[in-house]
Image 1: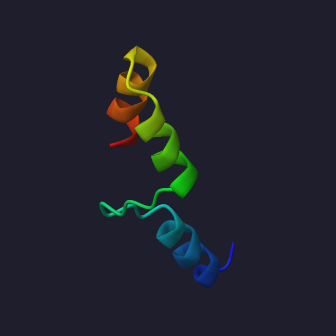
Image 2 (image 1 turned 180 degrees about the vertical axis):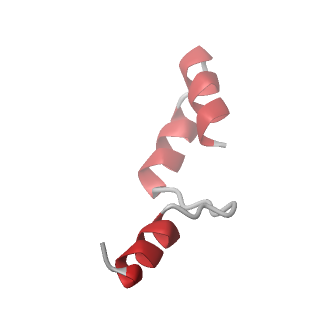
Length: 45
């Protein structure tokens, strides 16, 4: 593996608190108030 590729790979897995969410996930969460929605919100928020 080349040094440039190695740096690119480590940058790929850097997750410094970034949160990007699909609008479909937001819509689903807002439509499900029951137990399933609560479980999903726990993992997506």
